[in-house]
Structures are given as C-alpha cells and as structure tokens.
Amino acid sequence: MTALLDRIKRFARSPQGRDAAASLRRAASDPRTRTRARRLLGRLRHR
Image (cartoon, rainbow, N blue to C red; front, top):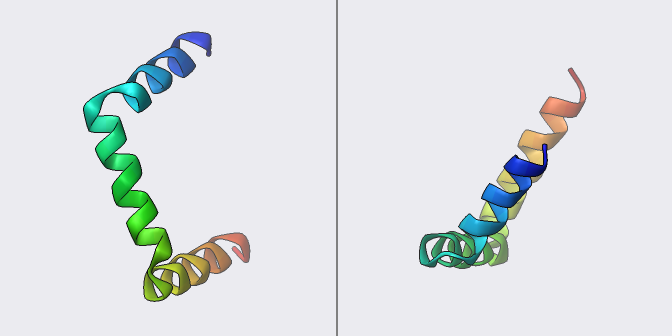
C-alpha cells in the first residue's frame, strides 16, 4: 500500500502530474462537467 502511495506522490510532483491536476481543476470549474459528474456519482451510489 505504501508503495502505491509513493508512486502517486511521485506522479503528482512530476510535470505530467501537474498537467493532469491543472486539467482536472479546469474541468471542475465548468458547471456542465460538474453536473455530469454529480449525475454519474448519483447513479453509482443508488445501485
């Protein structure tokens, strides 16, 4: 488990990880994307 967390931390600090985080922040700021995500999570929770 610790090895997995270490790999995630390394990725988050890498240039690719920073790009991915920036992309997620942009998507999260879009109301349409947020609505889609809420609907998907709602469907997954009600199964």
